[in-house]
Each structure stands twice: as C-alpha cells, then as structure tokens.
Amino acid sequence: MADQSTKNTPPVSARQESFLRAHHRHHHRITLGRLTLLLLFLGFWETASRLAWIDSFFFSSPSGILQYLYQMLTDGSFFTHTGITLFETITSFVLVTLLSLAAATLLWYQNGLSEILEPYLVVLNALPKSALAPLLIVWLGTGSNTIIVAGISVAVFGSIISLYTGFCQVDSEMCKLIYTLGGSRKDALVKVILPSSIPLILSSMKVNIGLSLVGVIIGEFLAARRGLGYLIIYGSQVFQLNMVITSIIILCAIAMAFYKLIQSAEHYYRKQY
Amino acid sequence: MQPILSLRDVSYSYHNLKGETSALSHINLQVSEGSFAAVVGPSGCGKSTLLSLIAGLLPPEDGEILYRGLSSRDYCADSALRIGYMLQRDHLFEWRTVYQNVILGLELTHSLTEKNTAYVLKLLEDYGLYGFKDKKPSELSGGMRQRAALIRTMAIHPDLLLLDEPFSALDFQTRLSVSADIASIIRQTGKTALLITHDLSEAITLADHVIVLSKRPASVKCEMSILYEISREDPLAIRGTAAYQEYFNQLWEVLTDGRPID
Image 1 (cartoon, rainbow over the protein chains, first blue to last red):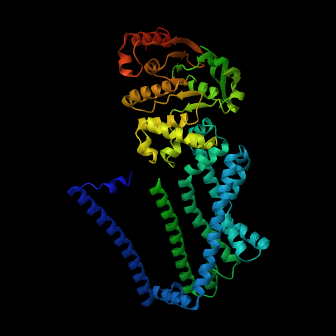
Image 2 (cartoon, each protein chain N blue to C red):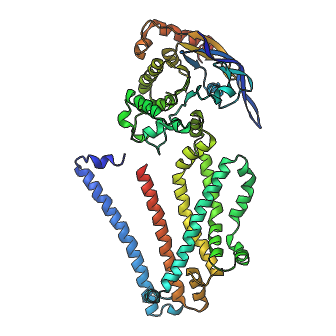
C-alpha cells in the first residue's frame, strides 16, 4: 500500500505542502533539542570541572574522557576490550535467540510440557541472575565461557516465556485452516505460528540484546581480565575514573548501535509486509 | 439420489469443569450427491460444531457419520476423498502472496505437481484473480478475498465442500453478489456442498435443500426442498419471486414455532 503513493505521485496541494513543511520543521526542532541538551550537559560538566566546582579526580570531565579515549585508541586497548565485550555479547545474544526459539517451539508443540515446566520457568526468570555468577565461576572457571553463560542466563528465561505466550495467542482459526487443508500440527507450526510471530521475535530480540549486555558486564565484573566490565571494576579499584566513565560511554554506544540494528531489521520487515 | 453423506444419531457435547454443554443431540441428515444443501438455525446452536464433526476435526461422541459409506476415521485417511472447508473468515496469510496462499493446501498435501498448479492458475484466471496473483491479500477487496479462499479450498480437488458462513464477514451489497457468484461456481463444478448460515434469505436463494436446526442442543427440526422456475444466477430476481416469499414464510414459521417475535 505504501509504495502506491510513490508510484504515481499526484500533484501535491498547497495545504499538503505546508503540512509536509510543518512536519519537517517539527522533526528538526526535536533533533535540535536533543543536541542542545547533550551539548549543555557536556559544557556544564566541563566548566564545572575546570572551575573546580566538582573534583575532576572523582567526576572526570569530557576533555579527560576524550584524552583517555585517544590513548586507548593509540595503544590498541580500545579494540581488545571493546572487541571481547562485543564478541561475548553477540555470542550470548545469538545463543539466547536460538535457545528461546527452540524452547518456545517445543513448549507449543508438546501439549502439557508447558504446564509441567511453568513454575520452574517463572522461578528461573524471577531469580536475580547475578546470584548465579559465583556458581558459574566455580563450574566454568574465569573467562569467556562463564561470561557468555552469564549473558544467556539473564535473557533466556524471559525470552522463552514471552515467545511461548505469543505463540499461544496466534488465532487458532488459522491453525484450523491448516488442519482443514490436510496439514499436521507441525505444518501449523511452520506455516502459521512461526511466520506470524516474526514481529514478536524481532521485538523480543530487542529486549534480548540489552539483557545479554547486562549479563556480560556482570560476568566481566566478576570473572574477567579483559573487557569493558573488567575496565570499569579495575578502574574504580585504582581510582582511574576516566577509565570507568570512558568504558561506560563506550557501553552506551554499543547498546545504542545494537538497538538501531534490530530496529532497522524491523523496519525492513515492515516494509516487506 | 444416492446420499453421499449421512449422519445417524450424531451427538456432541463440550466439557469443562463447570459442567457439560450439549451442542448437538441426535442429528439425522443426508446430503445427496451434487446437491447444494444449507443448514440454518439460531446463532450458537452448534452449526459450526456440525461441520467440524463432518470434516473429521472432532470425533462424534455418539452416532456415526458416513461419507461415501466410510466412517470418519477412514475417509479422513483417504486422500481421494478430500473435504474442502471454507471458514467464516478467509484467513489469507499476509506474509504470502495471493498465489502462495491459494497453493497452501497443495503444499501441505505435498501435491504441488505441474497439473495441480496449472489447475490453480486456471481457477485464478476464471475467477478474475490472475492479475492479482502476486499481490498481498490486503490489496484485495472483500469479495476477491473470499474468491481467493474458495480457490484455496478447490485447489485440493475436494469431493465435498463445507461452507461455514463464508459470507458473514462481508457487507450486505458485496454479500449478495459474492454469495451468488460462489454458489454458481460451485454448481458449475458439480461439487456437493453443505452451507451453514444463520441468514434465511441466503439459504433459500442459494441452496436446493434446506435443513433447519433447533436451538441448542441442536436437532433437525425440518427439511425443505427449494425449487425455482428461473435460473439461480440472479439473486435479486430470485428474491422477487412468489416462491421465494413462500419458502421464507414457511421457514420463518418453523424457526419461530409460529410465535410472533417479541
């Protein structure tokens, strides 16, 4: 439907034109507002630390952060630490997505299984996963394995529950249609449940990427010698607050980039259907 | 004529913890080959349950359903005796094109042969949907969607067609033309059809045999054969005949037990 308007563009009326102008103006104003807020904040922070309103040893400053970032880029430590955190986050995100899809499918497919497992899933989902971290260290040692498992454990249970709930909410008449055409329950899964759940799967991926990052950072706090989580803990222990805040800012950028990536996948899907 | 489908003393109840709801009680009916039968009855009287039983989606609790002499377990396993089932809503999948939607049944029965796809393309052509075969279902009008749903049902070469109020989601004007349209398509192919509706006028314009069900638990209240002297092609002309009025009044009498509406 959307592409119809572009195919045969009718002449735009003056009112439509003024509406479009107002729409664009509104968007520019929003972007301008966002940038102003950021610049004001950074300017205030920098001024406050220069004029010694705050102690820059504890609170750092935008220029201090830039300097530290430059140093990280030149000595290559930026790439090692960011790289390892990215690797762990992406691995646990991919595993969470695959595991939760497989589990939700199995729960939907096997009548009764979900009823048996429901209390366990609820408990595991509600349990603070950081409580598991010491156990994981004992079982898996310190290193990437532990951290990836920590990342998975934070996201996977909630994801299973939300996917399974979504599967159950698919219109049962659509499955009935499959049965009337001679299909089996497996056909209903492949032809109806999964394709109609793609928007749900994408939105659960959006949540999962954030939660995987949380889990990975918790893991790195406790069991790593590399990674942004490690830098944050190490920096706070040696009072290198530039190191801590720079790492946090890199984390913000990573979270933002992941979110945008999945959002554009969503946009792409919506444009297709 | 030889009955193709016969129901003997069929009963069905729904169960839950609060108790049991009897939907159908001792239904006896027969549909003869090549006929267009309609089942009418008050809303919620178990008409859809009846179709689910005939289609073999539910097993009858009591009684037996014979289709070409076979019981429901046997005819569902026989791929030559397919039962086509049109649901109330078309349920065309938005993630498939019109063509991919209408071949769904062939895909599910692993019969995507050259002969079958050629048949589907011919149906699309006959029903004026060929130009829309690569469009999304949301780009079709209500009547076109219903025709696409009919093609999807016909593609698997059903021996018997079950129609579960397939026109109830359409607005009145479209409904008149689409129902006449689809009924004439079905007549031309010579398929046996069983239509469920709560619309008396629809039943007596389209069908040549009307079965009236009672309130829940449903049982057969009366049956009536419908004959017109003019062709069935024009639903409005039929609605203008004296025979139509006569049938309507008779059916109305039966449905309301002769009592005026309150």
